[in-house]
Length: 600
View (cartoon, rainbow, N blue to C red):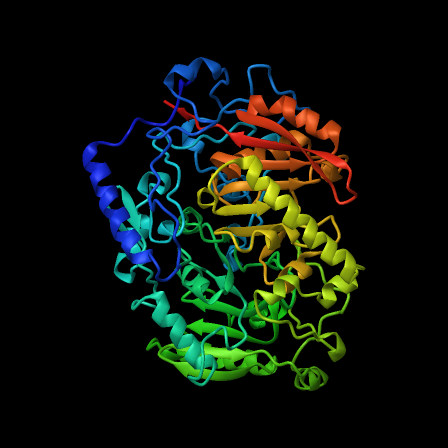
């Protein structure tokens, strides 16, 4: 058993003075500069100092009847009247499908290809079924844009990255804060200078990455995602990912900073993104063996790149002195040449290739037996094995030139036409979500600056994310793989997202998101072949939402009634509102807010 309480009391005066100093420095830096933000204050103290709705305090402890203990999923779920059990404190960073102990028990993994770093979910009877607690000294995250540079040490209380990467300016300790100076292994002069250099390399020194046509970037082995953070002033949006490996908390740092990222790895399976989605794939010292296995990982990059898209590889072997590196570089040249990629620039340990638009060279190499061409029917990228082949865009009439952001958000793309969405339906959907988001903000009753990380758990065409595009947020758009494949539409709109199956936990750390949007998600999974229940999805929601975070749920009335009954057992507060759906019929909306609690 444990004892419940609200978060720790106010910080000592010395710490408050430190934070005030940081706030003043950050405010003077940001005011009218890089982010052109007028949001204030720059630093928000935890609700233990300034209590917010939905938080608890010590005299409320009697309301918590949940028990502390390890509980596992059973064949039939029955949540006790006293509430769902709470996992012990040592599980405060639990990621179910990246549990090291479980993965070590698996004997048939190809560790030479890093299959052990991929998501491996335990059987249901071995899955924890208890609420993941926050650390005792957890604090409400610092608001964006200050969080780009400063986060609470107590929220990501790991010093490994600062110790091994301190000289590379990834992250430094600064009192009770972590400080991110914007450096990286390959951009020790800062991400801004590095991004400027890439712009010069891709445009013959005439422009930047945006003028080079880059709208969406995939950052492989992203570290703490400073590359992504410093692309935002160019309105370039990045899907950043890295494995949970020796640098296991890098994604946790990125999310705490308010930068879009997820746990993933290039190993034996295709990444959960559609083909032809990124104008750039970037790898800066990402420790990926691109030359191995006949270049199968580079062929996955080829799948993800749009025609005329760039592959940026910084610190390639060509510039290292080890005797094996010239051989590796020669292999890379042979593989990229077979795929007809053109090496357009080399400078200071950075090489950039461009994927061809014209497929005649690739078809010729295929006819000569130099290159394998994929079967056109192999289009799935959810849990699909990597393929040692490239996909041809044989019908050039289907290749559509997309506008830049923000015009791309409202552009009627060919991917919409393919799935049967008319221009009228598309416009109506956009107007619907503009209206809904405006009303959502009024229901939430909080400053927009208090929300940064958002996930749309059933994103459809991405209308919800489009309606939030002018707010200081980023949105992870999830398309369940069992629904109609709308993720290409989302990427064509200049947004980012991933395929997923909500019968499995998502590859992210606990407390990743400030707001989750579940639009007719639960009813989709009723009777699902995966055998997951409403409670399973609620448990995963609770794991990835931050204390005081919001969950907006719209669904069938019977589903909403069950969630409303269960919510107190998950330590959620609930309010019920009514909105009109797309057919102009009234529809209930649940606004759930996770209480701020801790184990002591």
